[in-house]
Structure formats: C-alpha cells, structure tokens
Image 1 (cartoon, rainbow, N blue to C red):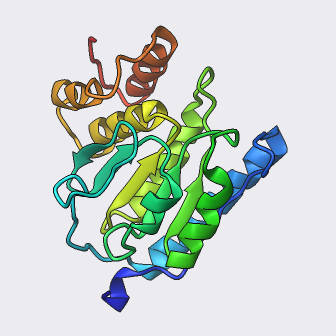
Image 2: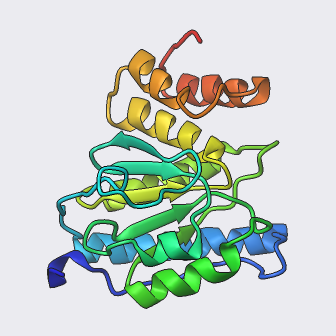
Amino acid sequence: MPADCSPRVGTTAGRRDGRHSRPEKRAAVTVAKFLLGFFAVAGIPACTATNPVATGQAVPVNYLEVSARLVTSGQLTADQISALDPAEYPVVINLAPGDVDGMQYEAGLLAGKGIAYVAIPVEAERPDYREFVLFSNVLQSVEKGRVWVHCRSNYRSSVFAFLYRVIHEGADPDAAYEKLTQVWIPTPHWLTFVRETLARHKIAFDF
C-alpha cells in the first residue's frame, strides 16, 4: 500500500445507544470540521480506484458508482468495511443517524485501517442545508482522494451526492438525477429540500 495514499486519522462522533441529541449532533459537526484541517494539511492524493463489483466483492445495499471519485451506498457490513483499501478509499462519510445497525463497529474498524471517518447525522424527515454545507466542505477538502459516502439505504447519500455534483462540480442535472434514480425516487419533502438547495445556488431544475 502506497504510504502517501493512507491518512493517519480514524474518528467518529455520536452516541453508542443510537440516539443523537442536538449537542451530540453539534459534536459530530465539530469533529468533521476538525478533520477539514487534517485533510487540507495532508493533501491526500488521488489513487487508482477499484470497483468492488468488477472484482467480485460483495457490495452494500444500493451500491452506486456516482463518479470516478465518489461512491455511495447503504450501511456497510463489518466484512465490507474490512475489505476497504485505504489507498483507494481514504475517507468514509456516514450520513445516517446513530440508530443504524453496524455503526457500533464502523468507527473502530475504519480507524484500525487508517481510514478517516466523518459522521454527519442527517434526519430523514428533516434534512438541513447546513448539513449539506458541511458535507460539501469535507468533500472539497479531500478532492484528490476517493470518498465513500453511505447512510442506511443510500437515500440520504444519493441526494447529497447529486446536489454536490450539480452545485460544486457542474454536472448536468438531468444526468446526475438519472443516476440518483437508480437508487430511489425521492419523496416530496426530499424533493423540496433539493429544490431549495439548488435555488440557494441559483440553479433551476424541474423534476
């Protein structure tokens, strides 16, 4: 494993009993912001990416190759986390709340592999623009590395990835949305969140 592709951080925030209060959610945000400084200093380089589907590896639910540098999925199992190569996936972002099965072991396994872990709990019924801003800041800070983004079923992750690609990477909204619908058709309140977020960036898109 190339030494220059492996960060030296593995961390998380949140309660082990699966619930996030507002102070604890702020703690998760604080941890993520701290990691921004690490990413900026580390200058994580680009690494050759391997598609686990192509290599015959088991993949998480709703696995999706969003782009050359961005993968989204549902919750990873312990075996799937253990199979991640830190030279290819130096950063994992988790958008799920704390009540998802698997989160009790995820942070420790990733830390043991030298993979940076950022938890940004997003409530399914109340996605918040500030959470997307933080998500975007983290991704921009590791733009030279490949990032795996997941939640419970890849609903939150696929929407956040769609918004990031359209807003920050200039992706065609139609093509990016078509990619999102390979996972699910967002519910009305999520479509409202998407429209309002795009509107903040002066982007009009009809679903």
